Image (tube, rainbow, N blue to C red; front, side, top):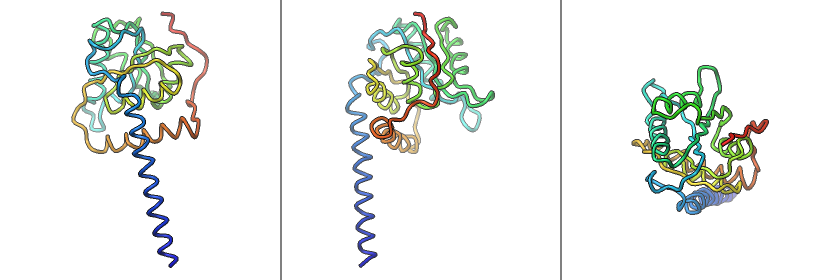
Length: 212
C-alpha cells in the first residue's frame, strides 16, 4: 500500500514537472515569436545590436559554426545599415578563454571597425548579457544576434525587463538533439529565474554609457 502511494506521488510529480516544462516553453516561444526575424533586410533599424557569446572553437579545436554564423549575421546587419554599434557579450572566465575579445577580432576581420564595438566581459549567461545591456550600457532598444532556438529566451528576458528588443536568427548549423534538449530546460529555468527566484546578474558594476 505504501509503495503504491509512493508510486502515485511519483507519477503526479513527474506529470506536474512535465506540464511546467512544456508550459514554460510554449510561453517563451509564443510570446516572442513575432519579434524574431530571419532576414536582416526586413528587421527594424536599431542603433545597437547585442551579439550573444559562445566559444569560437569546439572541444576538438575546430571552428565553432555557431560562433561563425553569429559573426556573419552581425556583419551583415552592419553592412545593411540595420545597426551602427555592437555590444559583444560573453564569458571571460580566464585569460585563456575570452568570448568577447574573440567576437571583436572576428567582427573586425569581417569589416566592422573597432570604434563601433563594445566588449562586455560579464555576459556569463543570457540573463546577464541582456540585463547588463540595459543597466550598465544604458540600452533598452536593441537587436539580439544569436541562433533561432536561443532568440526566444533572450527576447523573453528582455521583455520582462521592459526592453524594446527584436532578434535576428543567425544561420543554424546541423544541431545535435542535446542542444535542443538543453534549451527546453533553459527556457523553464528562465521563467523560474524571472518570476520565482528573481535572479540578478552576477556582476553589474558602474554604468558605462556607449555615447552614441
